[in-house]
Amino acid sequence: MEFNVRFDKSLKYYFNKNDITIRNDGESKVNEHGKDDPLRSADNRVSSNYHQLLVDQEAGYLATIPPSIDVEDDSLNDKIKNTLGDNFNLRMNQLVVDAANAGVSWVHYWIDDSGQFRYGIVPPDQVTPIYSNDLDKKLLAVRRTYSQLNPDDGKYYKVHEYWTDEDCTVFKSMNPGYSDLSELTDRFTTYDVATGMEIGTGNVLHHNFGRIPFIPFPKNKYERPDLLKYKGLIDVYDNVYNGFVNDVDDVQQVILVLTNYGGESLDKFKETLVKDKAIKVDSMGTGDKSGVDTLTIDIPVEARNSLLDITKSDIFVHGQGIDPSDFETNNATGVAIKMLYSHLELKASVTESYFRGSVNQLVRAIMNWLNVPDADGRKITQTWTRTAIQNDVEQAQVVSQVASVTSDEAIAKGNPLVTDWQQELQDRQDNIIKGDGYSNEKSLDDLDGNEDE
Image (cartoon, rainbow, N blue to C red):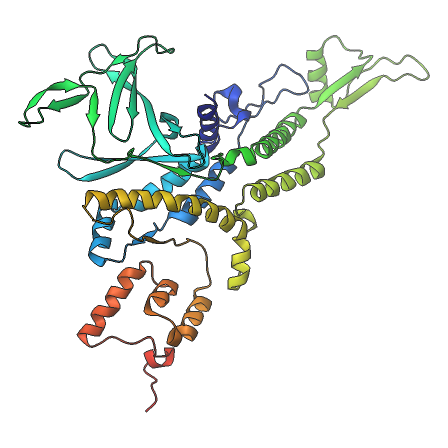
């Protein structure tokens, strides 16, 4: 399947197993004598990890701080936050990484035996979605396929889960062509509807979600992985870089070319050269070219350095990232920093726009589990926070200057010292109730105790 092939290639590059290392089974190796060529014996194969750097840059920039969810009900907000869990940011980070490598990532949710709402990230290569052919592109069904060990015989077999908006049917197979496809009859426990008593096992699970409990998180409109944009550039960089290293190794081997050598053997030649610092050659008269010449390899250093720099720059341009080796801000203004992050922000903004609808689906699934009456129609506000270098002093000055005409919520969101603006608002409210709070109408001088008498 083309999708799985592309995802597997992206994973290889993410784990620094670029095509340059295929001969070494994905391992970067330095090999000074890897080829049977007296002049070109070096065969170094070291891959560059630019793909992981670009992917992790976006994931860290976009999802280090998870989006805050507001459904206009503080009590319900807390319940949703608790259900999403303390590691919501880690899961969002993984979703961004998976989407960058596959073009789309997937979340599956379920209700566990204790009645608690649970959700997890499914590897993209396990999911085969089935969409409608109309413009709505509605998700009609999902097939999830993965390997599972049979403890009875120690063999692995394929498990196929077929999910619809009403149930899940499970099959198993071992043959590649699914010729032995059969029902996995001991997958689910079945109960008598009338008595609630356990009556056996089966391969069908009836859920009550009313929708398919799988949520896609697309990276972009066409669900294309990021690697396709710059894989060729990374391969060029690897080839030039390793060719450079090979030449450096090979140039250290100086080959002597002897013409009309008058000695008995090459061993005698080496001994005489070390002892007497001279060698004997036979002269053939006028115009004779007898003697010793050296055969070496010339390295076009300047041209290769230029090509490496150009290729590296293009990798970050096409990958829409920031080159950490070219990071010089030194008290840069907010505008300069924004310009530095402009390409990364453009990429992250597109990812965010496609992730917003998916996060809404997850939040609505949680609200349905909480029996919220208007779960499918309630307004959901998401606030995404970027993780980037910023000029905190300049940002604080801006917040101070507009404090008198700005809401407490906007000030809390813009405060460079605040990571959780909702908690900041709560803390401010608690301080006001205690009598030691302050209003946003006060200036910075007021807060420093320099109020007008």
